[in-house]
View 1 (cartoon, each protein chain N blue to C red):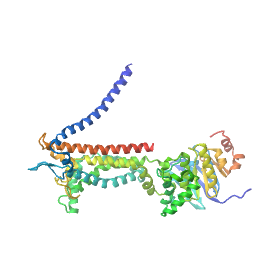
View 2: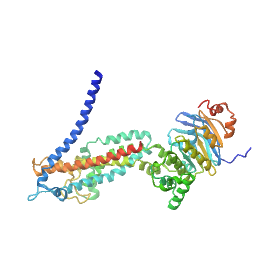
View 3: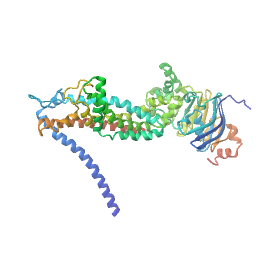
View 4: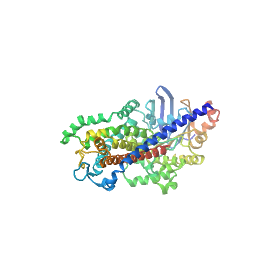
Length: 293
Length: 255
C-alpha cells in the first residue's frame, strides 16, 4: 500500500516537471506574441517584412523594416556555417576514423568543453585578436564586421557539429566499413564514399543544431560585428543582427511604444526561425537513428 | 589418386595474437586453385580469424599481431611492404551478415570498380550486369537496379554482396559463414552459386554447418582451439577421419 503511494507520488513529480517545461515554453511564446501584436496596429506586417530600413528614431516617419537585420543574421549565420561545416565534419571524420583511441578519448571531451566558453569571452577575442587581424588583411576600418562575426560563430558552433557528427559516424555499422575495405578501397575512400553518406542525416542534424546555436547567439555578434544600422553590403562591412538589435535597443526604448512592441516582433521572428531549424534537425536526427535500427 | 591442382595460397607456421592472447597456433594450410576449401570447427576455434588473415582484414584491430607467412602464388601477402589494398583486390570477401551499402543495387556493384579507378561508364554498366548475372541475381533485380539495396531480402542481399565482390574480378573469394543468417532456400541458392563460381575462382568458405562443408567443398580443414587438427580431401575427411577429435566433431559428439 505504502509502496504504491510512493510510486504514484514519484510519477506525479515527473509529470509536474514535464508539464512545467512545456508550460514555460508556451508561456514564452505567448508573452512574445502578446507584446508583439500591438506593434501591428500601427505598422503593417507588409511594412515590417519588406521595408529595407530599420529606423525607429527617424525624425519624420519611423520605419521598422526587418530586412536589414534579417539579412545580417543570415549572412553571419551562413558565413559561420561555410567555415564550421567543412572544419567540423573533417574533424569528426578524423576523430572517428584516423585518430588513435587514446587521442580520441582526450580530444573529444576537450572539443565538448569548448562549447562551455562564455560567449562574451569569444566576443572579446573577436575585438582584440581577430578584429585587428582582419583589419590588417583587408584594410577595413576596425575589423568589426560580418566576417569577424562569422568566424567567431563558427568557433562556437564547432563543438556541436564535431561532437554530434562524430557520434553519427561512429554509429555507422562496422560492416559497411569492412565491406568497403574488402573491395580494395582505402581508408580515405571508405570514409568519404561510405561512412559520411551513411551518416549523412546525423551530420546534417548536427549542422542544423550548430546553425540554431549561431542564429540565436547574441553577445558575440554584438561585440564583433560593428552594429551599423544600415543595410548590409558585404562581409567586410558592419552588420547589426536581430539579436544585437534587441539587446541594444530594448534597454533604452520607452515601454509600450510601437518601437518597444516591434522589438518583441523581432524576437518572435527569431523564436520562429530557431524553432523551425531545431524541429527540422530533430526530425532528421530521428529518421537517422530509426534508419539504423 | 587424382592429381592435385595448383596451390594458390599457402599458410606457413601462422601464429596470431590479439594483444597477448594467442588465437592461432602454427597453422600450415594449402588452398588449391579452382577448389572450394572449407574451414570447419566449433565456435571460437579461430576459423573466422584465420580466413580474415587471407586478405589482411585482421589489421582493422589495432592489437592484432601475426607471425609466420601467408603467400599468394608464391609471393608473401603478409610482409609489411605489401599494400593490403592490393591484396584485397585479388582476394575478395563475403561476410557472415549480408552487408550491402545503403546505396542503390547498381551503386553497390559499381563501388568496387569506382574505388579501383575505373572511369568508363559503359565498362562499369557492363560489368555490373555481368556480375549480377554471375551471382544469379540479375533476373530478380533487372527492373529495379536503382532501388535501395536494403529493399532486397536477406538472401538477395547476400547474392548482391557476392556480385559486388565478383565485379572487381578477384582471384580468390573468401566466404565467412555466408549462410549463417539465411533461410534454407537462400542457403541452397548460395551453395549452388559457390559450386558454379569455383570454375573461375578459388574459394575458401568458413562454415558452422558440416553438411554444407560436405556438399560444397573439395578440401576441408578442421580447426579446434586455434590449431589445425586435420586437413585433407573432404570425402576422405568425412568418411575416414584420421583424428579422433575430427571424428567426434563431424559426428556431432561435441561442438
